[in-house]
Image 1 (cartoon, rainbow, N blue to C red):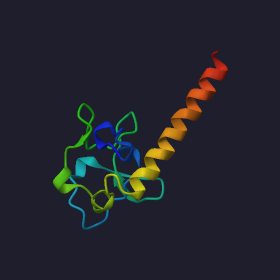
Image 2: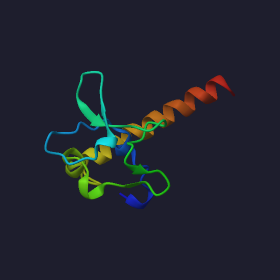
Image 3: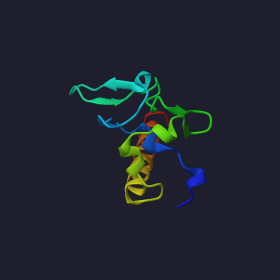
Image 4: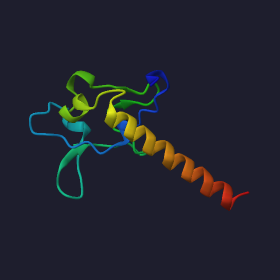
Length: 99
């Protein structure tokens, strides 16, 4: 796996923040089930990501779930695979609608 070509797809996943996490309050939101989660920007990215460099701006304070998500690990590979499949499906649908 080449992490230099990563689309940072994991930064689009919903991230539940645990009580022990030390995330700045301005980056928190509440989901439809009342759980504390990382806020998202208008494009669906985690609000803590630097969109120009695809890097976490609170890396040393990132939630535990983010710390457990190994770059290049099984979860990473599955998320990237699912993302690529979705992108392919969207491009197929778009090309069918607009040949």
